[in-house]
Length: 166
Image (cartoon, rainbow, N blue to C red; front, side, top):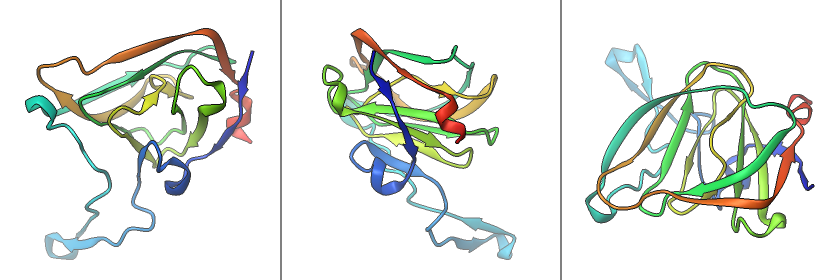
């Protein structure tokens, strides 16, 4: 069984798969008479294919048993999909360029202040959290058309959760 090593989630490392959604490195606008800061342009929301509309969702995820088995990858051919954690807990992101090629997989340790926006057609694992009842704000596409493709792996991979804490 292939075991994925976990690397830190950075804009540069994640760029082939989409956007890291965070305020670090971005200059805010001062708004509301100086009582708030606004950070714009944090992700490219891509949902307009075939008349799609923006969908705002709220997901609550549970921890999977360790070591985490990677058995399924999915992608959305008609739009991007953004996940922003709401509870400040660290979480994991698994992506690949080709689900049939184990060497194309990458696993990232996302901090609780980092979200991701999976680009359209980016293969990714469903939500992986390290704390039960982790809530996420999700921005994705709603509308007509088949916007979910799943690929079940013939040989599962695994992630050693202990690596994420080190």
